[in-house]
Amino acid sequence: MQSRRRVLITGSAGGMGQACARLFGATQDLVLTDVDATRLEALAGDLREEGYTVLATHAGDLGDEALLADMMGALGTGSPVTLIHTAGLSPAQADARTIMTVNLVATERLLRGMEPILSLGSVAIVVASMAGHMAAPPRDISALLDDPLAAGFLDRTMAAIDDMGTGGAAGAAGLSYTLSKWAVIRLVERHSVAWARRGARIVSISPGVILTPMGRRELAETPGTRQFAEATPAGRPGRATDIAMAARFLASDEASFITGCDLRVDGGGVAFMRQRGG
Ligand SMILES: NC(=O)c1ccc[n+]([C@@H]2O[C@H](COP(=O)([O-])OP(=O)(O)OC[C@H]3O[C@@H](n4cnc5c(N)ncnc54)[C@H](O)[C@@H]3O)[C@@H](O)[C@H]2O)c1
Image (cartoon, rainbow, N blue to C red):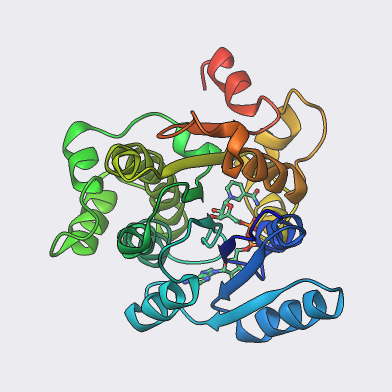
């Protein structure tokens, strides 16, 4: 019998996280984390009642070092592990600084935190965004974004966002989201080389508009998201299961030659935007 892997799912109480928990949990053992303790425990309770194996739940902010250490302890060492990293914040949910902290800084900490336990066959799937496929930032800002754990990173990045003239808090949050996801795609590519030497893979997924709690809120509150969704060539909204199924493929042995790249799961939205010149 094939041995069951341990899968850590961040943002597991959210739309994509829950879909991933059910899909991966069908064949693997789950370690779940989310900042929302109530929804996390409710999900874990439901999954256990439905017959899934939830090895551990870790409620807390992803940026918390102690939480990170506990999660890595739950994953253990010596056998290959899977990370499905969905936790994140969108412009309608938080301010520019918080978005950058969670989406980029915490992601870098998480990936570095995983490095000591990587073994042959380990894999990480990191959820980025179609927003990361908008125009690349100027070179000085991209250099800044490539080092999110540098001293003063958040202060310098927020100052750079202000200088770019975003026209207020909502614009700054939107730009912070776009830059954070652009940087996450690069960060995955960068880590992939060292991970490959350990026999491990890392890939990002860039979703289009997906009807999760986050996606529905963005659709209701952000005109740009609505326009993007309406123009999506696939002609239907994305579902959390679209992302979970892509993640399952990318984490599987069938994808063993795929690493250090980004897969857009967006119904053709970015392709449309580029052809339109947007
Ligand atoms: N839904 C979309 O349309 C869409 C589009 C592109 C990219 N994404 C990305 O997909 C990922 C998943 O989004 P979703 O649609 O499932 O959103 P969601 O809001 O349904 O779920 C996100 C989860 O992350 C958790 N979370 C937020 N901040 C956290 C923190 N500091 N520590 C730990 N957990 C935290 C939330 O509690 C929530 O349960 C995000 O990274 C998001 O940026 C979403």
